[in-house]
Length: 252
Image (cartoon, rainbow, N blue to C red; front, side, top):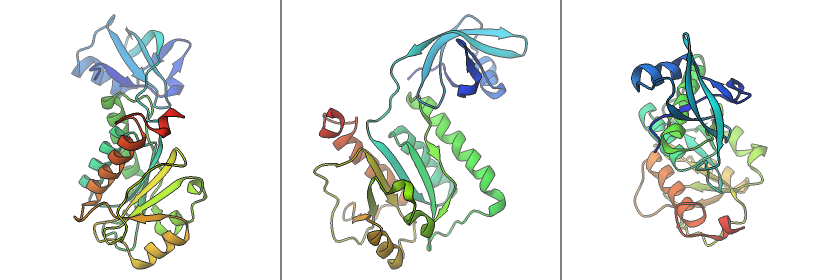
């Protein structure tokens, strides 16, 4: 893992030069003690990474002489994690680990038995915190992309969301009769849906099946929501992504 690695939004990268935001400049110079002339890496959160030289101009810090880095740590799978809202620390832990496991998008979900609703007045600040968490996780794990985090959706909105219609869609339920045992994937775009600590309402399960979701169990033990999310993502990445032997998904 590169120690000297920083996020720079794409609008701050122009003509071979990147300008660091004040918080990143502070972290670089005052915390990590990087100096002018040192070599560092940056990424733009949209799939591109660069290597360059630190240049200090008064209070501003720039990375100059940028050279594109070809690696990016992105999975061949287009993974969408739909995660029911849980206690803040557990939800944020799941965001971090999902980023490390290669998700492209996270959808926070409000379900009937979700006991931690977010007041409307706090949605904006909560989303900004979530975005900061996935940005830092992308930085740590060597990705060039930062997962997208959508606004929290009510279950009724989510289950009819047209953006997911072209994906293979799985919903995990501890009482499902069928254990998840995938032999193949017919699409690289996969949606996995994890419920709240209080479980799914039977009407939510029924609506999911009607909308085309496949309902499976992750085994004989009841997993916490964050554990279930990490388990499902790791299984997918091992079987069809970039954590295990080459598969049909990344041979194509």
